[in-house]
Length: 498
Image (cartoon, rainbow, N blue to C red):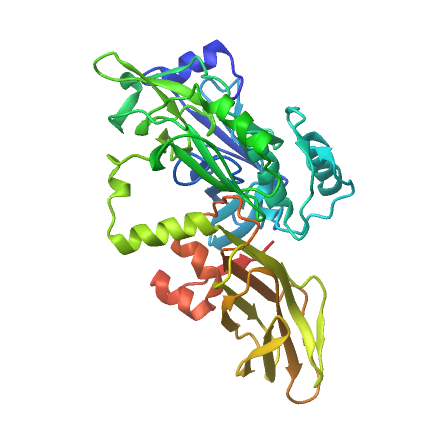
């Protein structure tokens, strides 16, 4: 929970309160007179309660503005109820921006979104979690908000992303990782209840589960063995993948969580900007009864007024989300058990293509079981009318070959293939390109390669943005955007990836 004054909390709960908002973005400061609306999704873990999650928070806003913010510009939003004390809502970085006339829509993410590069440790095992976190912060420009217990680590896995390693460390410490409202890396460890209350007087609507949830058993897949501690059935068992976990860590987890009991909830309420995902608070209903809840996610919305929707996510047979058909349930269980990774590369330098094969994407990853699959997608523009030959190799074997022709200079081309029945262990997917005739140049940033693998190591739970139509539209050419908008007036759209 963000530290604010008692006066700020009192004003936030009052009826008929006034709300001030400001957004510092790049070299611009937007005040209420230019802010149309914004949405902030602050999430600590997806689905039900877990540990080791590394979710990226998303901030999207619309303003009256005809200028242009740069990709990666820093964005800091604030809320006030008296125009004097301002509560920060986080630190984000511009990922996409759309401009139409005098209005701009900006989509931003916090630093967690950009930590998909491979973690190259500069320390050796045995070590402890604080040494790993300090190594990550020093080498990747992050700042840690606080120290955590120095749990011992006997091995440092290779071939994982920075984001995954942060998740593994957080899991060993019995918590989840996020960036706090000051932009610092924070390992949220649920060790005690915050003495804070939400009452029905401040809610527009709410619902909760009829029974409390506990976690009394953990089953951890380390990639080499399955570690089980505690006793209990499905609803009180936490299943995770973590190559750092040992039996001692699992025993510590049981000792930490044996006290914990909380309810699931969905609460629509006044926007209290100091509330964060990862908080533990109490909810009081109409009958003046108090229920502990674990704040899994908060969605804030501002459009002159400031509202929020708060979720406490648990596993429960009484939860409607659990009542699915057999196929849906099986797929969800398979996804949860296997985990997944998403790797993305954008060419930082020009790629010169000749009749000889040139590697444009090289993904190395580890699968935790045989028979898994990986989807590879490559989007690119050639900038000229030409044709290229594309080949995909899985573990050195050619699995697909095709020729893509570019009819117009600005056409966006797309190549994809599905690698199936992958063996357990180390795998590699390589994509090459060659010019069919002469040479050609793919400019820097014009090729984006993505690999998504189900059942791969690196399975710390993550959440991407909830894509809107405008998010998806960046992959469409201008004529299609005009069709979607239903307008033929002048449109200016600027968009870049990470």
